[in-house]
Length: 169
Image (cartoon, rainbow, N blue to C red; front, top):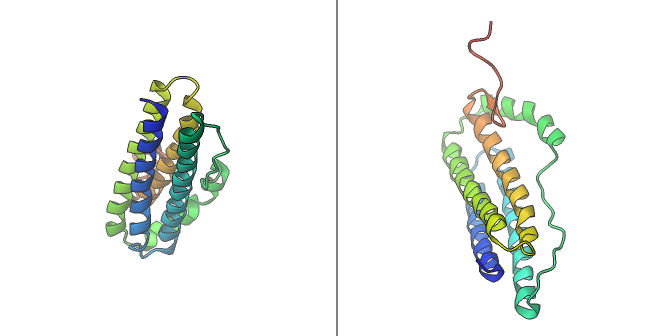
C-alpha cells in the first residue's frame, strides 16, 4: 500500500471511531463515562486533523514529515489512581445499556489498531514512523475502553489481570 492510500484509509478509520464516541457519549447516564467518550472523541478528531495535514503535505511535496502526535491517555500511574473510583462507581450503577456501547467502541479500537500494525509491517521503512505512534495510541485507547468494560461488568479483571482468585485459600 502506498503512503497516500494508507493515510486516506487511516482518516476513514479515525472518523468512524470518532463518530461512535461522539454519538454515544450523549447516551451515558454516568458523567464519568460521558467524559471518557468525549475525551476519546476529541482525541480521534485530533488524529483526523493530523492525518489530513500529513496527506496535504504528501500531495504537495511527495514527502511526509513527522510532527509530534499527542495523546490524552494518561500515564499508567494516573490510570492506576483511578481504579478505586471506577470500581466504586461500577457497584453503584447499572451499566447494561452502556456495556454494549463500550463493546462496540472496543471492537472499533481493535480494528483501528490492527490496521496501524498492518501499515507498520507492510509500508517501506521511511513511511513506518507515521503509523508507529498511532499503534501506541490506539492500543492505549483499547486499554481504557477494556478497563471500563472490566469495571462495569465486575468480572474481577482490571487491564486483563485477575484481581482475585476463586480458588485461592
